[in-house]
Length: 180
Image (tube, rainbow, N blue to C red; front, side, top):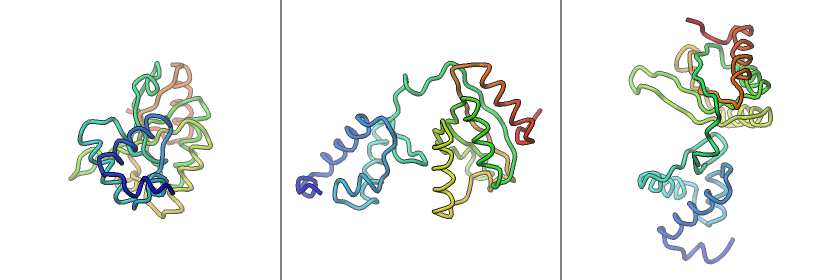
């Protein structure tokens, strides 16, 4: 670890975090940022919170922090779908979507006290699905759908309307999609 990070002022460290996130364009974990800058992960969490407070478009995903750019995240076709299933079907649900060329942006559940709880997923292939499921299992975390008897929504996107339609139909065939 570089000695220069030990003596870096907090404001300089935050600018460095912002610069790294912009350059990489892929999620960066808080732990790796902490290790790189020779501070604790909690310091990084605080720094990122301060960056968000000044309206920097940083999101926390299941894979790490990501700097959002409009062009990268806009696919031509986007839908919100409502699903209901148990935790044990989450991997199947996500694989059905990505196997149809669909990008899974987020998951949202409606909490009776807190309102909508949204988690950025940013899943686009089976490798992302496996990584997400492995993280949930390793950390013994709960899926948000466990708060709502399995009911949740996803924002999904694709560069093809047909891909969205086929994915939605496949979720229906699997008994995962809630229909009106």
